[in-house]
Length: 159
Length: 303
Image (cartoon, rainbow over all chains, first blue to last red; front, side, top):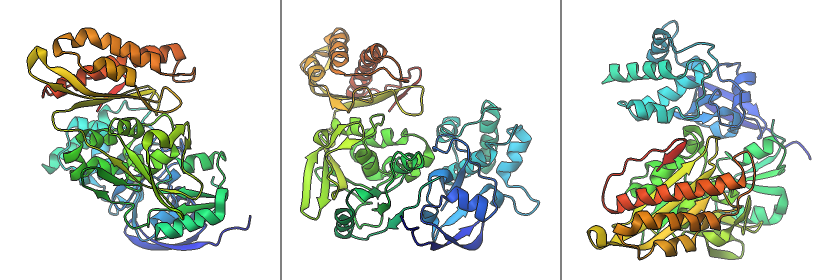
């Protein structure tokens, strides 16, 4: 078949306006990683099961591996690169470091962004709320305990 | 990687149906993409055209009435958090809260879930106990079909190529109904899902079960109501329930048509159906009595 015409989309990525020309079948993960050189979101399971490619679109967590980039047109996209303010870490990043919630780091960007979405919706989550929200965010190193601890620390500091 | 396709984004159902009618089998309706894009990445589906239905007015609405109308592009997350759904049929919101993971729930839609008809899913099974019907639109007009007739088998529905699923309508249970949805499994998708709803008429041990509804999903080629199990439940007194539950579970196990697969052998699944029907009935009965029935079972979610 003939290639479908490319489309121009405008997004606000990590606070900055970006305009890119893409094919309709381009996935958000590839646009972020290959076009915008934001490598924080990872391709892992490629089936929305693991959470390594999690980014926030208008504050909602999505699997960028199975999300058409055209759907991000006119919306705000946040990747892990947008969390820190210069040298100053986001409170979640600080808490992950302090709690030792990072080992190999492959899941970390997804964990941080998922936690950010949760805290935005629910500033006083219970431990069960955190565990429920993290379902489908897989970590093969930490056993989750320290990740949950880190998120609870930030939630409690906000009370 | 996805193969190239042309994306159409009609703003009316008429325009969407005209596209589907014109493109025939070259087009697939597209909403959240959480199911469709996966099969397209695998190359199992290769539609050269996608018709995005998310811009169609009304498709994203939830409307109250004697029945609750849920638009096709309502996401699982919206269903989970809708005050209207939580007030009219809290179990629907609770089941939606346990679909897949939060990323899928943020994007995946109710209509997409039903129209895709993956046998390992939750909503259709639950909706069968709510006498759900689906509304289909096409260039020929609209038709309403019971959900039980719409879902024909694995990934197979009664939707014609030029039809769109516009909404699903459910009839919330009357006050006093106790209901539970229990799903079990160790894989990403459930191995089985059991929905039970019933009322207890009268007080204490003499109260009798009425209006029992039992549906089983994931085990047979399509989700189904189990009339033999419902018949065994209706009329049973509360005092007899523990004894009767075994017969209900046996009837449910006899009704399913399981296959050997990665979720387990057919024999194992049949046994698990009996176990989880018994458990789901117990939770539904406790809820019908007004008791908060916290229940947890290994590798299972109780909604």
